[in-house]
Length: 254
Image (tube, rainbow, N blue to C red; front, side, top):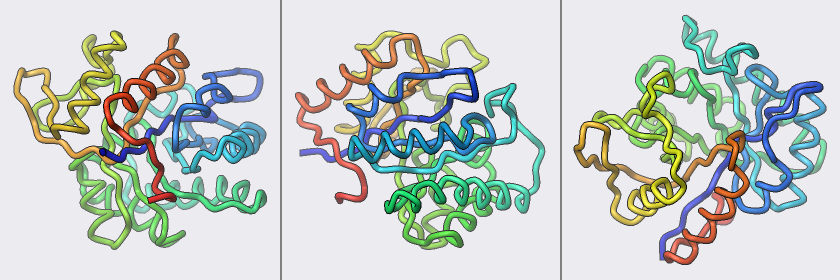
């Protein structure tokens, strides 16, 4: 039996603008990464999403990103490690306020978008993020791109880490995700995405865009909640993972 966490980015609506099908997708995942108001989300959305996650017995994580609502946190910013530390502490604290107010405990932290991808390669940025998480709560789990600098930094400081793989993204031969600006960055065929996930979990391998198999460790699988068929995909991937002998379980229950 293979044990795996299934996570999804949540709480990304903002004011009058609704994004995603959080209420429905929460029925199929085990961990929720909730936006903290910088790249998406707002206080009311954070509060509502925390309540929905608790109702569905889904573990809660902070999803800190760059202060870039227009770019949805997917544009690189030239920041110092200290600025990264400050941003992450601030955003964890914001979400944790809502979590504690409900008498619950946060499980993890997963950086968003450009912050996540930059930290995957920049060890100074990765160290700053890991330090921010550790200083706020050393019992939190740090989610990072499998085998990346963020995972290494979390391990080095003494955090529990979770190597994350992506269901609907393609990979480069160095283990990085194909940049979203490239046409082949996202896998649009559900069956292809699920086949990739099962192989990463069971065989520890993924086929890169260069046609080379690379080794990969999967502790948690990310699905995206803002796509056109996100809800259908969430239901389908859960059903097929379980029928393939994969047990879905968050880190609180491990």
